[in-house]
Image 1: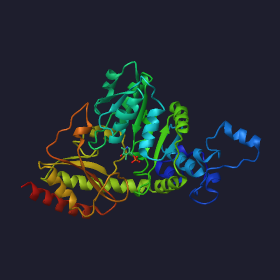
Image 2: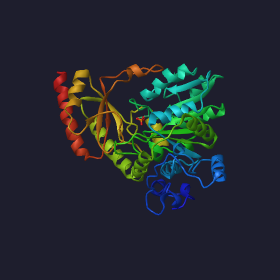
Image 3: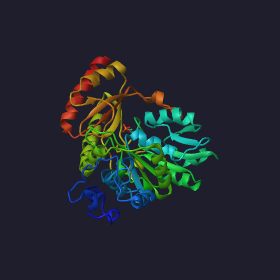
Image 4: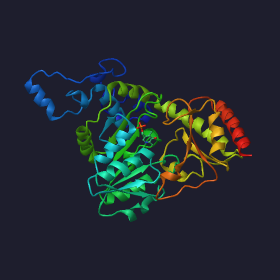
Length: 398
Ligand SMILES: *Cc1c(COP(=O)(O)O)cnc(C)c1O
């Protein structure tokens, strides 16, 4: 494999070839696990020379080895226009480092109101303690975000679709407005991955992934990444180094292994997810389905315009009923594990309660909300399981 020309090829090809430089693989197909703390130098001159620029050069274990560089480069190749990628021990570490690479005391951060809960906790906790003010904005604001910009606004954080409520944002319009004012944009792109939404080419400066989800794909590793546009790379790299952020080679190796099949997995998550969502939308116990690829989802038209696919995560609102009726539905499901995270090969379910996690907007619905991750099982079996769940819900309600 070569390190040239990767970005001209189609995304499915880049998933297979990305990051497989001969000097990193050593002749095997997948780069092996290079574990290291100490790196040995040939001489004092060699040590001094390598210190000058450690990117993609063995220097010290914390700066990575070919195992991490290979996955990082493969992720960069999925984002046309990107400069480079760094890996983190979790998606939350990727979010926090991206924010810290940009923000200074006195700055204002514009944060989407539908952000992942730990991202919100970071803003209201550590960032506040360090003198950064967070203003939450309506995910559907679009180009009107320009009306919120103040002199102190340093960054806009986007997550599209949003956590739990799945609003699709007008990412290109928000990024264009920010760019015109010299404001940095960062996007949590975990739901779509760069395969369905190449964020840097849409105007985003920092594209963040919880690789824990679809990159790893097997629910067994914590891993995050940030891919930077050329303008945002130097600060991201400096901040990551100063914070001592690093991901283990074993975890990166599992991430690279997962990445090779992410395209075929996502295609199946999409097909199964849409089939289950369409079925749910027709059931009388369901008030509405909230799935970016299905009309009625806030921002569905933007999903049609900007995305090339949908992953397996969506929600549905029950028709009336209370928390206990929702629990009756969820607790008896056979094929859906009750658990956080998602993006693995298996189906998952959680009760979702966004009302306490919104401040710029409010959440009200016809009944309780359920979030599903549709895995790679046969959708007919998943539908049969959900049919019995809706029966339990109806019995509990009446
Ligand atoms: C899971 C998730 C994260 C955090 O990832 P971890 O690897 O669990 O820390 C960040 N953003 C979104 C949208 C997520 O779903």
